[in-house]
Image (cartoon, helix red, strand yellow):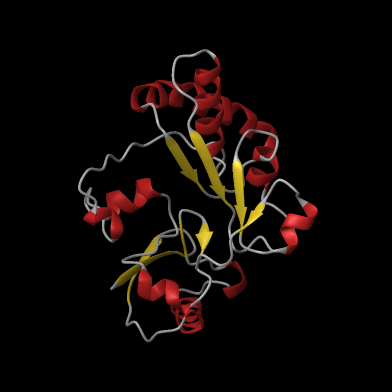
Length: 204
């Protein structure tokens, strides 16, 4: 199995064995590529790996977005995506890049929103299943707007909060709680602070 890790300024390919723990991986990369362990994130699409089971269950894990992942694999996808009988991969603009200021992200989010409208209208989703990245917000708003205008039927929207959010929702989750979205969390205490959320246990 191969895992791709965003280190200092590049994606690092690393061959792994299933018995390698996350801690082993972090220590190896930190030493081999001179990366601060506190800043090292092993993740897929921004959602951190949480335990050793993730390494076993996923065909690959990437510290980049799906865009970079697909390019790294020569336009191919692996894991559960590769087993899908009918699948389309569509690239959309990111709402906010890592390190980007919140003020400037308003404009990039608006741009992402306008560019995603034709996509949502074309596929007319019945279910939108989303997780942490802010890029999902333009998709949600576009689908709700198009349904208000009676151009599409309102889809069921489900947001799964990251297991890393123990005491509070992510910024994406905080925004979506004001919209008709089902918010699922992986820690029971979040339901006390955010009544709209629903506890579903651990997914990882």
